[in-house]
Length: 361
Image (tube, rainbow, N blue to C red):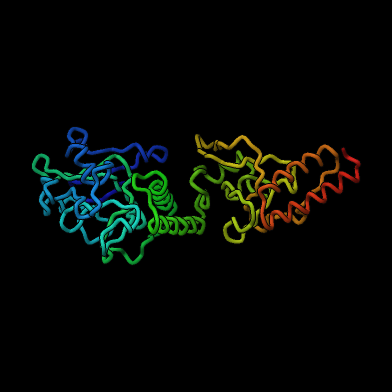
C-alpha cells in the first residue's frame, strides 16, 4: 500500500508487514545514495533539532523558498502536493508546512491538522525536495512521526474524521493514528489530541458494526478474537478478557467504565488470581501469546451488565477457602470506591458470618 501520494518523481513509502511497518521502509534508490541537504540544516529548517527551530511558522521553510531548495515552485508542485488541501505537505508557495502538536503553535488564521484523520498517510517528521539528474525529487526522514501540519482554516475539510468502510482500511488507519499518538516525533496535544481520540473512537465503533476481528480491542491486543479466546478465558464475570477477546479495563467504580458497563470484582464470586495488566498479545502461526503482569489484581474490571451474576457474592463452605476469600476482599476494599465498595463490604460481612458459623480460626 502506498502512502504520501504524489507525482511520478515523488518518493513513496510502502508498508512492509504488520509487525515491522513502523520501522521498515522501502525508499527510492536515489535517496539511499544522496542526502538532499545536510541533516543539521534540514533539522533546523523543520524545527526538528532542538535549539535551532523558529517560533514563527513562516521561517520554518524547506521547500521552493528561502533558498532551501533548488526546485522552483512549479517543479516542486508538479511532483508533490502544494496547498489547497489540509493533507498537503507544502503550501501554495512551495514552502513546507510547519509540523505541530496543537493549534496554539500555529500562526494566526491557521490550525493544527493531522492528515491521518482523513486519509491513510505516512507523514515523515522531515521532508525536502532537490533537483537531482535534472528533475525535482522529494524525500523525507524514515519515520511516520510528522504529527500535524499548520494549515489555513479555510483549507480544513468539513469532515475532519473520515472513517473507512472496510476492516483492513480501518485497521491500517487505527494503527497509523495510534502510532502518531504514542510514538510520533510530534505527539498530538490539546485540540489535536482530542480530535485523534474522537476519531479513533468512531473508527472502533465502525469496526464493531462491521464485525471486524478484535474490533473493540485496545492496541495491546493484536491477535484475532479466535486466537485470543483459544488461549485465554474470554467472557464471564471472572475472565481477564471479554467475550470479544479484548483485555478488560481495570476499575475502582462503575463510573470508570465506558457506556453502561459495571465495575465488578472477580473475587466476589471465585477464588481467582487475575493479572492487573495485560502488557501485550501477539499472534504467531495462529497462536496468541499474551504477556501479563505476575500479580493478582485487587481492582475490579469493567464487564457488561448482562455478565454480572445473579448471586454477586459466592461464600465458600470451608475455612481455608473462607480465609482466602476474606483476604482477597480486604485487599480490594483498600482501593475500591462507590458502588464497588458497597458490593465488597456486603460480601465481607457474609464471608465473616460464615467463618463464625463454622468456628473458623
